[in-house]
Amino acid sequence: MAERGAYNCLFSRGEELLFASRKSGIAPLLDVIDSRIDVVGATAADKIVGKAAALLYVFMGVSRVEADVLSEAGEEVLRTYGIAYSAKVRTKRIVNRRGDDICPMERAVECVRSPKEAVTAVSAALRQIRRNMEVIKGKNFGFGLMRLPTIGEEIDYAQVKQMVDEFIGAGFSYFDTAKGYHGERSEAAFRECVAKRYPRDRFTITDKLSQNYFESEEDIRKCFEEQLETCGVEYFDYYFMHAQGRNNYPKYKRCRAYEIAKELKAEGKIRHIGFSFHDTADYLDMILREQPEVELVQIQLNYIDFEDPKIQSRRCLEVCRKHGKPVVVMEPVKGGRLVNLPKEAEKILSGLHGGSAASYAIRFAAGQEGVRMVLSGMSNLEQLRDNLSFMRDFRPLDEKERAAVEAAAESMRVQDVIPCTGCAYCVAGCPKRIPIPDLFADMNGREQWQDREEGKRRYEAHTRGKGRASDCIRCGKCEQICPQHLPVREFLQKTAKTFET
Ligand code: SF4
Ligand code: SF4
Image: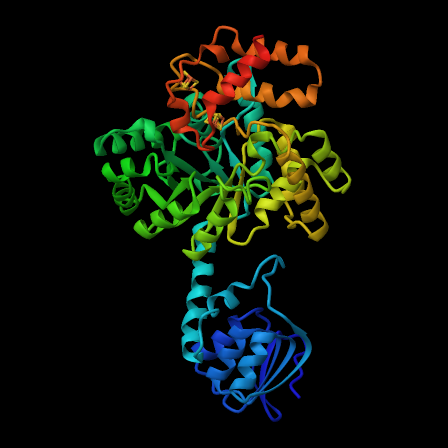
């Protein structure tokens, strides 16, 4: 009988100890195979044995496997190949560390039959996981510089600096910006509050190529150089093709945007190429097949969009996993909608007595398998401190919390709200200068304020000196750019009816 003691995996032949490892998972088995240690006829004692491990044991030629936990598929392999075995516990399947999905190694051998094939599949899967960890280093929580604090119309630099200091002080390093963010002032805010104040190895920065800043190859290079200068850096850690989908991907291809990004990477001005994405899972799959050199993908993922038939967060995540791309999550709180919850949803989550509404939304996103980074577009110190309080030592949602989040999502789905995230992508192109996201926020706020006059007051304040909902000339420009695919014109008609009559 092999005694594992403090080891996770151990090989012995009679009294002779051949190999022992404290590493977890499948890694010790690959170490034995890669080091060509002779374990033929040996007894292997292992913590968890699924199909992947069982096939590797067959490949190694061991004669007996003693498992703490043995899966049904693992048992079938051992039985088929005539290897003796014992197990303290039997389980239907081996799950990942979060316990919410199948173990990635088991997934890698799902369609594999032969032990030799299993070695190749498992080695490739493990290599991919390690590579993914390399693409994005550091902790899994990022600072989105999209909705910064303001004093009047100006960015409140003193507060942003304080936020940056507390963020970096807590051990985080990932920042996310784009040329159009915060009225085209986000990149400069990054330069002043981060790049000028911290050594380059203390932060990583993502910037993006947005479709409204180029019409040709020449424009792309020019825009990129300007972005480097505005951000005050010599290279971007990550450079994304912004908001990819069927409405703009052909333009990026036509202008050779992906090829230019590769050239810039070869020149050392970009460390990793990625894209952010707003479309269906099948379109994502198509882009990833066409652009295999892309190293990471940013998708919209939150508990209310997870199964949404338009946003398709879960399916998009699965596509990224299939292609082995680490995922960055945007909109984990859906532009604040999952922070200021309607009463019913708020009641469900506060019943857990475990944290803020934002904490459940962000932990939901960060806990998904394949998600390597979650962005939060924090707008003040209070939000930042709340986020740090649960992301400093991140813990995924447990079963009870997941059930509560699902119940909260369901209660919101049945309400009549406009699923606008407040990204403001639609605003710049509107010929009537209608502050679309503000007006939709007014519509969504009706239920919370329960005071018709308060809603009207807000509407009047938001439209002062700007376009009103009824000014819409139905040109449709906003709908072409809206990443949420909202029928903006239709919602504006409702808005006009609500606040202007
Ligand atoms: S459809 Fe209306 S809201 Fe949209 S861009 Fe045109 S005028 Fe503005
Ligand atoms: S309508 Fe669409 S583009 Fe405009 S702010 Fe809302 S989500 Fe963004």
